[in-house]
Image (cartoon, rainbow, N blue to C red; front, top):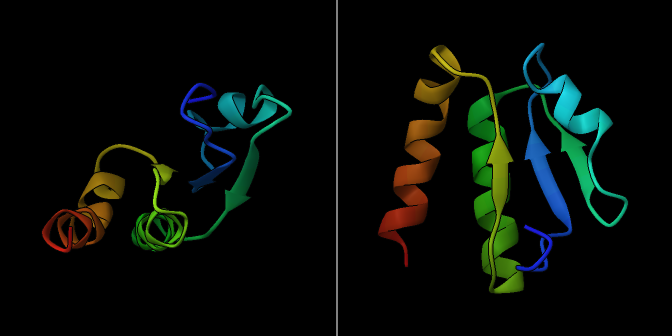
Length: 78
């Protein structure tokens, strides 16, 4: 991610995500939100505004389902 110039990572906190946030490189800012779908839409908007990549991280299971709509929107609006 560092090589791609990623500066912000959008995520929902959780037991499997917290270690990543604790060791997030200094040049990256972790932006925490309360809903997985929200972080995916935020990452999509961020990517469009910067004309680059947007990164979102969330929990598995229902968290994946919550991100599906935003990921589909990101893929269809290219």
